[in-house]
Length: 83
Image 1 (tube, rainbow, N blue to C red):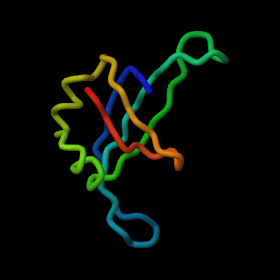
Image 2 (spheres, rainbow, N blue to C red):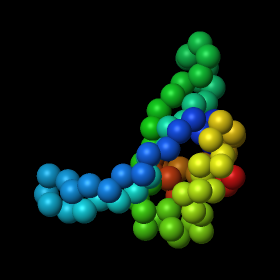
Image 3 (tube, one colour):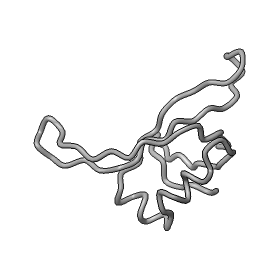
Image 4 (spheres, helix red, strand yellow):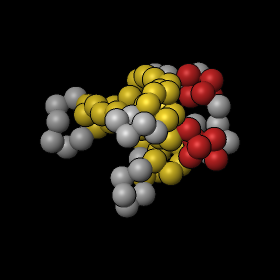
């Protein structure tokens, strides 16, 4: 899915169950037939999954305001990012 990367937030916090959560929230925009202009949303990717993609946070920061390609699995999770 081609999206415009409009922002990022690195997250590192403890959830309600006491588990440490680390990852990156991507803020994206893309055209949608039911929206005038672009639809926007955020997607979270866990740090371990992001590391397996072979990307660094700086790689994504450098692509803010550019089009990237994200791959989503049937569970609606990010499983791939192509810059």
